[in-house]
Every structure is written in C-alpha cells, then in structure tokens.
Image (cartoon, rainbow, N blue to C red; front, top):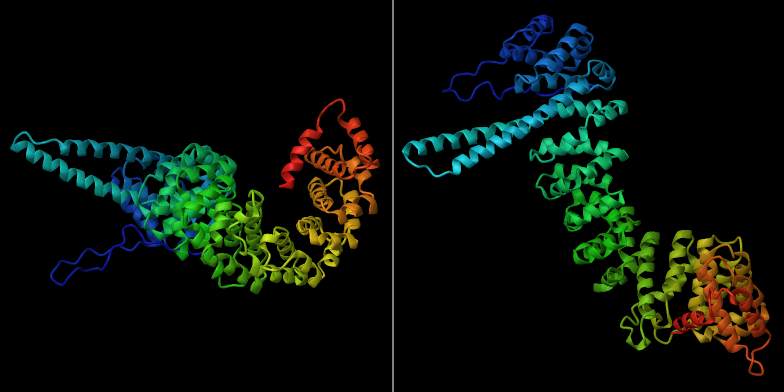
Length: 623
C-alpha cells in the first residue's frame, strides 16, 4: 500500500564541483513540527505558504505518516480550504498542494474522506483554471512572435526586438515546464476509482478538459490524459462525448509519435473506441489502417495493433483497404511463423476477416502462401487457420462461377496437392470446428480443382465418402452447421455426372429427402437442400431416384408456398426442371399435371412468382 514520490523541491547532488560553493541543504520536515508548518499556511505571504506546503508534502511522501496526517481534522480542513481559496495566487503553491492530496489519493480507503473535503471538485476547478490560463499564455506567445517578426525601424527598435525574443524564449521554456506537471490529473485519476466520484467528474465536463489536454506534447501528460480517457471510455455516454469532441482525430497522431509508452497507451484507448461501428469509420477516415500495419513490424505494439485491425476488418468496406498496405504479407508471415501450434486468436481472426475479400484471398495465395498455410494446418489442425483456407476456397469457387468457360480458369491445379490430404483430414478429424472447415473447403472444390486424372467418383470410391456423408446427415447425429456443410458437399459431388450412379445407388438421396421433410423451418438448410436436389435432378440416375424412388415431388409442392421468397423461387426452378424432363405424350406426365395445378393454386391470381422468373434463375444456375 505504501507509495513514495519525489518532491518537486528535491535537488541533485549537494555539490557541483570542488571550486563552486555548496548549495544549501534541503531542510528535512519533522512530524512534531506540523503545527509550525500549518501556521505558515495562514500567512499572507505566498512564499511562506509555499514553504509550509513543501514541509507538509515531505511528510505526506512517507507512507508511514499518512494515517496521522489524515486523522488530523484541523490539518485536512486547512489544506482543503487553503487550496480552494489560494490556488490562483501561485502556480507552484497550487502544484505543491495538489501533490499532497495525490499522496493521500494513492490509498483507496481514503477516497471517501477526500470526497468529504470536496477534493475532486476543487481539483476540477483548478484544471479548468489552468486550461484557461494556458490558453491565455499561448495567445501571449503568438503576440510576442508576431512582434518579434516585425522588422526594426531603427537601432532602438532592434534592441526592443531582442528583448521581445528573449522574453518569448523565457515564456516558452516556462510554459513547457508547466505542461510537464500533471499532479492534478493524478489526483483525479486515483479518485475516479470510485464509480460515483467518476460520474460526478463526468457531469463537471472532465472529458472536455481531458480532450483539451490532448493538444499538449509532453509525453507524461499525454500518457496520463489518455489513460484517464481510456478509463472513462468504457461507458457509452463518455464515448459519445469523445465522438463529439473529436478525440479520435487528436488521438491518431500519437500512434506516429516516437515515445513508446505514449503509443501503447493511445492504442489501448483506440481499442476501446474501436468497438463502436461509427468510430471505426472515423478511425479509417483518419488513415489509421496504414499506421497500425506499420506498427505490426514492431513486437511491443503488435498485439494491440492486431486487435484494433481485427475490429476494423469486420466492416466489409474496410477489408479492401488492407490490400493497398503491407498488411497481407505481414499477416501471412506472422501466421506461418507463429511459434505455438495454435495461432493467437487476434492474429488468426484478422486473417479470417481479410480472407473474405476476393483480392486479399488472391494475394494470400501468392508466393506459395496457400502451400504454407496448408502445411501448417496439416501439422497443427488449427480451426481458425482452416477457416482462412476455406475462405480462399470460396473465392476460387466464386471465381469459377463467374467464368463463361472453364478453360479461362487460371488457377487450375492450385488446389490439386491438397484435395486428397483434406479428404483424409475430414475422415479422421476429431475436432468439430476443424471438421466443419475442412468439409466446407471440400464442398468448394470443383472438378477443375482436382488433381490431374482424378475425379470425385474415384475419391468417393477410394475413401468411402458416401457412407461417411450419409452418417453426418442422419438427424440427431450431427449439429446443424455440420449437416449444412454435408449438404453443400453433396452438391459439389453432383457437379460430376459420374457420381450420379453412386449417389442413386446409396441411401443418400433418401436421407436428404428425410432431412428436407424435417428441416422446413430452417430456411438456409432448406435452400441448400433444394440446390442439391436441383443438381442431382440434372442427371438421369438421380432424377429417377428423386422422383420415383423417394417421392420428392409432393414435399416440393408443399414447400412452394414457404414464407421465404428465396425458397419459393428455388422450388419454382425445380418444378420447371421436372416439367422439362417429365414428358409424356407431349403435354407432361402426372408430375407435370400436379405442378401446373399447384402453380395455379399459388400464383394464378397474385402472380407473385411466375414461371418466367423461375426459368431465368434456372438459366443462371445451369451456367
């Protein structure tokens, strides 16, 4: 609990050199002379008051004296009254008095007593006064600078200008010295440990005062000010006040300063503020991303920078901004060379967010980046890192969807070395999260991504994938997120015509149908099941099994009036596909009759979804 600080009146060595006169020794304060020091505080002479305050400060600096001092009601009343009445008379006196109360405020159990003497309110008043006085000094400096720049008219004017310049230098040195002293803030920061006291400070516009102090350049004062703002920033009303007072704009400049402790403190406050979406936009507008990316190169700032960058990368509009910095190569190197098996969450999460952007995903693959990521995943089985690979696979899958011809796909073979290892990982993984990411990655693999002379038919046969997938799809065996990825994987298999006989010969189609009946309430899963059926309906073997083997059409007709418009549109696409294939004597068979009747019942009068829009979607899906 003890705390000891250096007095402002403490000096260096007691001598300078043998040839110089010894400096007068500092008088040591004695507890039994406290009454004498108190009497000096009653004097009208400011120097006498200052001398008494310095002696009391010496006593307060030793923790062993604290209890006796605070129990002296006469002393405490005198100190608080003199501080309140005389703080304007002398800056040094005010500072010394504040240091006394700072010594007291270091002890949490003394805060209620300090509140009784209104020390917090007096301190706020002093800070407000000092801010106004500082502003006046700055204005005076500007006037002196303007006068010093005026050309002299004659010799006397030249002497006058020199005097002005000398005065300006003295003022600047004096102001710089004052700006380094922040004892008032130390008192407030300690008192703010009590939430009720902190709220009183907020009502007295402490955020405004602190924001003004951010314009100062003294490192110690900046650190203390930012630390105080960080403490206040956890409350919504204080954060909103910081937005109005443009704290972010002032804070960002400290990220580039050459004082490590100040940078660390500024990053902590920026991290707190970055939870707010509106403030994240302000941070981005103030070019924080390239500044933080630069800090990633410096280990002391890396963890905090990563956390803030992760928050900024949440917003889709910001993801593309990382492309124009060194972020991608730095993040990739940090991930690949991370010393522990599992990459730190903030680093992995940033990599995941960045990989959602198409251009970023492409950059991650360059310089054998994908190979390095895959090698690390095979060794460590890190779920978040596997999610990065999954996002990259989604980029390459989407890229192929947008191509007119498969021949124009320039990343053919990029995934070839990893497909079989991923299949083996999927079959043997015992971590649920990791298994989902591997299966989702495989679901994004197209025939163009497979190794040469390799097909899904061969992979399915060699690794017994259909029984494995069928087991995942059994209701109650897997969680919904795993079931969804398994359905997507079936859609990937259905892209290859040679897989159709394998699918139709298994129980997989029947399992998918049961799942479709059971999960009608889950729009996403229903939509993906419909898409899987759409792909399978394009092959004769699975077409027959779906329509005649499991009796899918009645359930499709029931789902055609689902509340979700995307589900309804997908149902219409499947009905069109069935109508096109189920021909009998030129007018359509039994299924065609049922579909037309159902459509008339649903849309005959409202026209909510017509067959033309469904056919348009069908054409898009067929590309």
